[in-house]
Image (tube, one colour):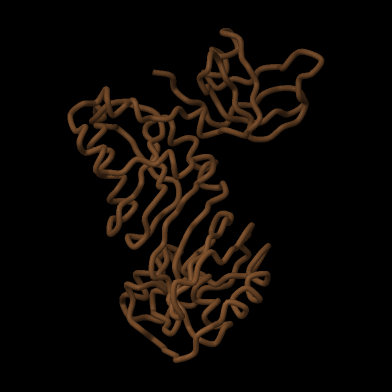
Amino acid sequence: MGRRKKGRAVSGWLVLDKPLEMGSTQAVGKLRWLFDAQKAGHAGTLDPLATGVLPIAFGEATKTMPYVTDGQKAYRFTVRWGSSTNTDDAEGEITASSDERPTRNDIEALLPSFTGTIEQVPPAFSAIKIDGKRAYAEARAGREVELAARPVEIDTFELVDIPDDTHAVFEVTCGKGTYVRALARDMGARLGCHGHIRDLRRTFVEPFEEEDAIPLSELLELEGDLAALDEHLISPLEAMDGFPEIKLSSDEARRVGLGNSIILRGRDAPVEEQDVCAIHRGDLIAIGNIEKGSFQPRRVLVQN
C-alpha cells in the first residue's frame, strides 16, 4: 500500500509577483505550504535579485509547465555601465572597470545586432549543467567555467530611459533560454565600457501578464483561508491559451481520460496537428497530437 501524499490535490496556476531576494525554489516551497498543495513547480527561474512574474503550477497544472516554460518572456532591466562582475549582476564581485560611458547614439546603434537570433554564452553563475554539476556551483568553488555559445531569440530590444551617464533602462521580449544578465555583459563589452545588471523585473511569461501577478504579502494575509487562496488560481486550460483545441463529448472525454486515442469525425476535423488541447465542458482533459485524423493523448490531466 502506497504512502499517502501530504496536502491537497489542488490544481491550477498562481502568478506570483516574486519579491526581491527570494529564489524561485524558495517561492515555490512557500506557496506550496500556503496552499497546502501536494505538488508544485515553477515556469522559468528568476534569480533572487529579480522581481516580477513567476508562474507557479499546482497539481495537475504542472503537466502544462513545459508549454509555459517554452513561451515568450519579457523583462524590464537597468544596466550599470563602468564595471563588470563575476555574476553579471550587482550581487557579484567587480572583475573589470572603465571610465568610458556610452552615449544614447552608441547604445541605439548597437541594439539591432542584439535582435533576432543571436549567439549567447550563458553566465558562469547559471544553472546549466557541466558534467552533471551546476555551473554556478563550479563558479562559486573558484573553478573556471567554460560554457558554449548557443542560439537564443530576441524579439524586441528597446532603450526606454537613460537616468544618468552610468545607467540605462531597457525592455526586451525574448524566447526560452535567454539570459538577460548576458545581454548586459555583452553590451558592455561591445561598447567598451563594461556593464552588469543593477535590477531586473520580469513583466510577462506567455500567456501571463504582469497585471495577473499577486504580491506574496497579499497571499500571506490569506494564510489559513484556503477557499480565498483558491480564488486566485488560474485553470490549466487558461495556461494553454493560443494552442489548438478540440471539443470532446462525454464519451470521448472518458476514453481520452483513460489515455486512449479517439478518431475525430466531421468535415472540418484536423488531420495533423501538434500540442492540441482536448477540452470537455471547459476543462482541459489532455494535451496531445492529431495524427491521421486521430487524437493521441500525451499528457492526461486527472480531474478532481
